[in-house]
Picture 1: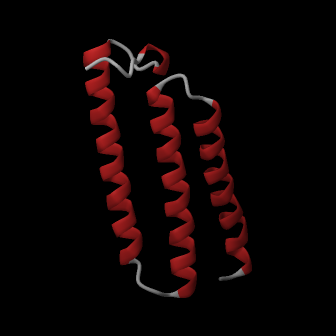
Picture 2: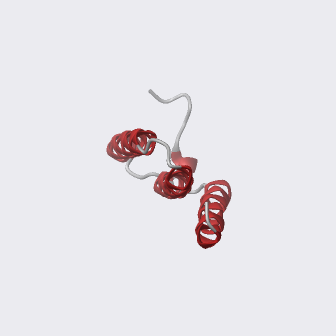
Picture 3: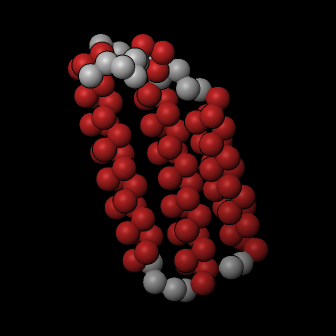
Length: 100
């Protein structure tokens, strides 16, 4: 790791922190939560890419992580489409635990 990669590392930590902050503070809609989770995954992927390239180890782990993040995004979007079709919106306050 060189001195030039330190701003990129701090930027990725900032991305992860902003994604976590938006996930905690904006819980009105499901789409906001999914977007903040994807933003955190992007920050983690960026951090892993910087760390793996600095060490010189296998980059295939980053590709595996990116595949899992894409699967998580597809699963979240399918859940969002299902909820919008059954309930009519994606607001968390309109969900009822006792509904089927």
